Image 1 (cartoon, one colour):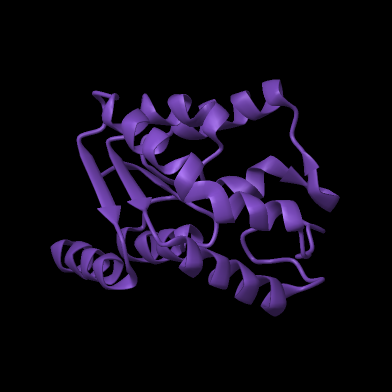
Image 2 (image 1 turned 180 degrees about the vertical axis):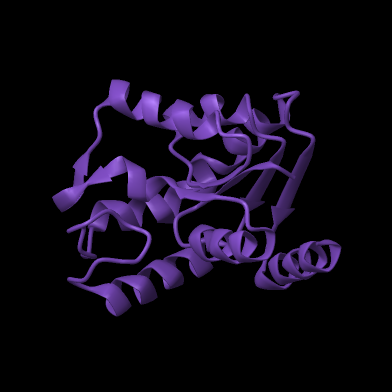
Length: 171
């Protein structure tokens, strides 16, 4: 595992998992939210974003945390491992609610400057429909890339922690 993509619904635990994997492996971590969002929740323009993702994915080793479907192919062409955190909709909704309450009007550690946490009904709708609308497409997409040697799909925290323990033992 040298180039690892971590994907899944918002609230699945991608950032937490990626930080833990980074701490164990010492592979550079690139949380895409931190690169995509400019201050005050301003989105990066498409052409600039493509360049950023391309530059990150060209590194020799990386953990890239985040979906961003439009640029997923750029990362998949270089990834050797994909980890899909396939948590239930209820768990994801609970976690984003908890996160919103914890960081409300504050910046989360994995976000760009001045992107303060807020309640966003559209975001909740996105999370509520993610597994229904996007899950199957994501799995089909990652299975098509020959560069990807390993695909891990974790359904719960037990499986996630078991994997992290195995990685730590192998280091």
